[in-house]
Each structure stands twice: as C-alpha cells, then as structure tokens.
Image (tube, rainbow, N blue to C red; front, side):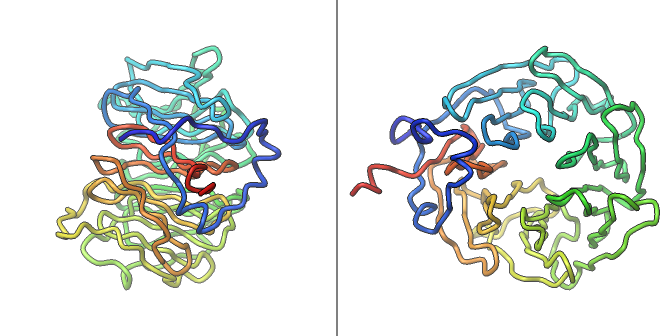
Length: 343
C-alpha cells in the first residue's frame, strides 16, 4: 500500500474547527491513503482516538503501543509492555495521556490504568480469570466496563483495585456504554443483548433483545456498540454485521461482510466495526483486505477502500477530522484526495 501524498488535516486546524467537518457521500468516496505506518511488527490488537481527535493509540501483538499526533500526522510515543503484553486499549474520557489496556499474558488477565506521559501504571485491575474481550470507558466518569471469556462483565472504578459490580453470564461476555453513559449494553454468552441503567444496574436489566431470529451460523456476538446518536446498536458475529434498533431491538438492516466463497468460520475473530461520529456511516474491514463504508440505516455501500493485503482488524473514523484509520498489515490513514477534489 502506498500513500497518494503528504497527509494534511487542514492548515491551522484545531479541535474546535475540526468538529465542524461534515461527512458526506462525496467526501467518503473521495478518501485516499495519505499516510502509511509500518511500526507494528505483527497484528494490531487495539486502536482508539482521544475524545478530541488529536491523538490515536494502537496496540499490537508485538507488545508495543504507539501514540500518533493527528495534527502533525506523526508518531508521538512508542511504549513497550514486555511483561504483560497488550491486547485491547482505550483512551479514558477527557484525557490524552491515560488509557486502560488489557494484557495478553496467558496467565494474568489483568487490566492496566496506564499513564503514557510518565510511562507508568497508576493501577492494576485483577479479577478476570480469562482473556479480556471488551473494554468500554464511561464517557465522562472515572469508570469502565470489561467483558471476558470468564463469563463475567465487570464494572470498575478507576480509584479502586476491585470491581464495583459483576454481571454473571453463560459464555464469553462483552459490554459497552452508550454515548451519554446512561445505559450500557451487555452480551453474556447467549444470543441476546441486555440493557442496564448505569445508575441502577443492581436492579438488573431493564430490557433485553433476542437476536436469534436474525442470526445464522454463529449465535455469539463478538462486538456490541452503541451509535453516537444512541439510536442504534451494532452487533458483530463471526459471519454477520447487524444494525439493531436500540429502543425496541428490531433489526434495521444487515451489512454484507461475508467473503465471496462464504468461508468464514463460526467462532473466528471478526474485524471490529465502527460508526462515523455523526452516526451516518458504518465502517468495517472485510475478508480479502478491503474496508467497506455503508450508509448506516439502509446498508447501502457508499465506498470500498482498497489497498490492504490482509483483512483489516480495526477501522475507525476520527471523532472530529475527515480522517479514517485502518489497521491490517500496515496502519493506513485515509483523507479526502485534494487532487481529485480539485479536478
């Protein structure tokens, strides 16, 4: 994969002005590779933007964490975690220097509250007894959710070593806050999505959605995410990507993610999808190396980003810039092609 030119997110762009960037079909269809990084020596396991879109963090199987400046389109930090390794990684709310990261150590399934500036762990969270499968920071409070193969969802306070709440499941779990932090969704090993009130989780779920009528070969959700607008839930299994109404659980549409030969294996780790910040688009890597961008509510394919030689495991829209980052054999930054736009 080669870049089409130098990466520039706009001269003098700030977080305040960048938030005014309006996405459209024309802009998405004009995306081209502006920069390519080959820093990770292996698959990327986690990727996240800061709340203001100024920085991007990636983690990989090579036990490295890289932080990139989106304003300068340059690498800002390289951190190592030899002892525990790094799988999932998420920035905390309103913070450019701290993140929660899950270990890749087969014998110690801890979570780390990591200060990048001083490169030290502020706290280690030990409770999970198997691989951590999801990490979701609260959008404005000092807490986060984690899911695991140990059949539990845990709610953590950053100031405490032990979890403040535990939800037991029947299989691999995952959980995610909505954009306002008022509700969280959990998948606990069954083909259902359970919704909890963040303030009253002790009372149990206030509703649940049965996914079985919509699922085919694989009944286990590997990824659950609220749309930024709060109206939708994105559900990913090994072979399907579904959009669910967050209020009544009805299926809105399904995105075509299967390979042409349909050889996805039930239970295999699927690419992690995502929403654009305005909830207008859904993005995901697909088998073969392409990245698809669909119109959210009708699954219309708006654009296919081509160039990766391996299936992109992570794809993200910047929360403020006209920027998409995709991770496969390389880390590619996609921006509107000014040459094409000018023509």
